[in-house]
Length: 426
Image (tube, rainbow, N blue to C red; front, side, top):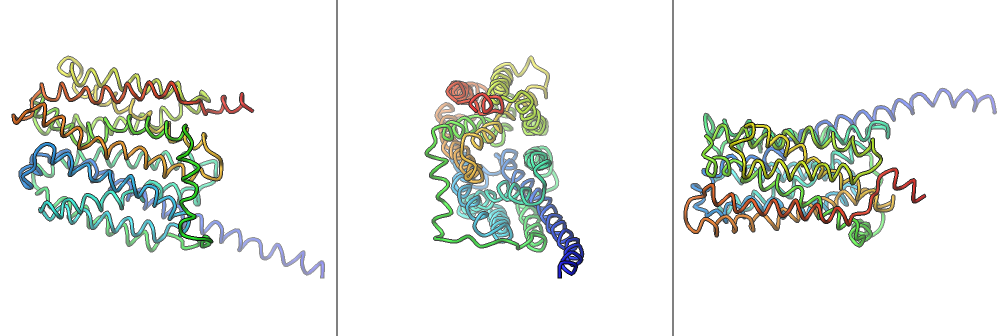
């Protein structure tokens, strides 16, 4: 009998190992498709910034109305950030990501239908569905890659999103101001998302052990994360550093340069797109610096300093700095906003680290949801019924200066969570 077992075990082991490798490969394929989702959702997040005149004319909106309409994306994105993380843990990746893709696709089509009601509904659906992109990609990466390559996979995930933000301005601008109507862009984007949804449904493995207990138990980890003062500090700091990019550049960057600075539309689109391109460089670079130093806060301070210096240069001294350098450097500094994502994980127990990402997205984009209409209101009051001008934007840009300075003050209060700090506490 002992000989039989000894012979049987080696014969059974290779197929089991091969099956495990096959499942990992499926997760990697699904992760690659989810990168397409993350790229597309970032593109539709930033694309409205290059079509502000068209949206204003089509819907008859004021400056405040346009800002409120586009900011609706962040209302549902923030709320569904919590739902997406919890649903992935409970139901697996297959259905939640598929539903998120379909919601984003439907939201794109609704936005392109050209009525204010459909645009409102579409923007809300885009935000709700897009909340599943980043958390879904991280979930798939965890199951597809070994620990050795996980950080690299997450880095590529963020890279895909930032490239989408870049494309949403750099590529979409010439299209909607040239051969394509702005409404057509949203229909094409919806079709592309629907294709990715079908491919995701086919490719994503369905291996997932159903979670036990009430459906409300999947939200229990958020109580641990959100009751931690360090978590709330990380979220607010990240939100303050994101807002100058998500609202200041992706929504108002092109009007600031074109209406406020007299820059031709095509050049304004290119210059505004330098900010998300800078993110592509800054997010992994500052993350690498923080890892190498074993400390998070010095890299965070460095990114905030870059944002302050380049932001002041772009807002008030744009005529004396190299044309594309200011936005690129500002984007590189803005990459520091990803450091609090690492810190919130390190500041919480191991058993809630997954939920920490959902909580961080909730806190970060709640800030954008709250400030989007406020900034539109500030612009409207400063303009006082007149067209937006250089003076209007010069005064309104103090909002972003204040946000970055507040992030700097709050960072001083934040506890260091890097490897060196953990070693010293141990």
